[in-house]
Image 1 (tube, rainbow, N blue to C red):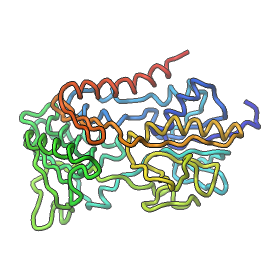
Image 2: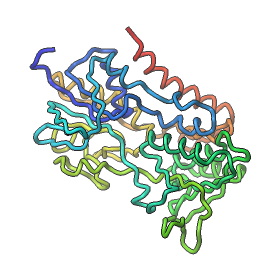
Image 3: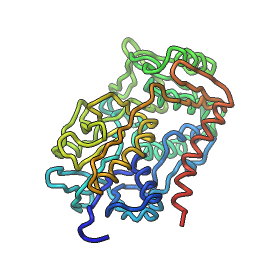
Image 4: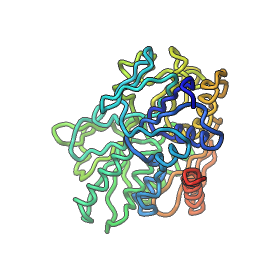
Length: 373
């Protein structure tokens, strides 16, 4: 490419940027592209509960970002972004390297909030970032062995529910861990249908997973709730949502509640039209799009089309519009799963087979692209 070709900087190796690289492979590289990410792989969080329950190997849920970047013609920079100056069009990495850009897209994901929300404790594992969670849980397993244990999972969303089921059925334990799911005052699956909540509550009871609907906090080395305690706990796993990374504070980008980058319907910054953001790091001003892996995956092809448009001098027009209902598949850790689509709910081994097929197909799609010639 000529020196006049626009320079696109992809900051973060999230689900949407995987789709961008896939588009570059399929349809050609439209701009000089750098991908800044600290890891050569992306871990698909949807397969982590299956790994805990012994249904997958740890490597099964990895997307080879390095191979995709190479096939796409993009330059991979194995580093972490620690700052962006939107006005100056520069980004700074942890190693001190300053990178200029004509266009930038941010897909780093959010950061864990467990210690900010709950307090600090050596037993506490935050599910974000997911790679570190997998490493820390693996290390805890190695140190703890197969002894009987009691685990408290904090968070009543889909992530907390799946982790509670997975840990109750964690491979290598005999008997399986005793698990408590502390949903907090928000309750169990507050953003889902009544039918799904009832089905999940029944399955939690069937697997002897105890529920606590009171907000928890860590004080003086103890996990407490109003009027009582959730102790003893050998491990505390927190799935309490994500926040925006601190390095966005000096970016000059408009931010919304929680510090997330404010973007319009085409994922473009409200202040700087040459900066895009997507996934858990962004917040749409035109509609509410929950921070969920489902939406991040589906928004990827839309982002790819809009980035291709702007670097080619065209106005981006594509907008990700969430469907009125999304299909959610929650593994129950025992070879079954629960499906939810709007008010419709189903449960069984066939749902688990469907989830496994969808997960493996998603991974296989990018494996084939990374190996294509």
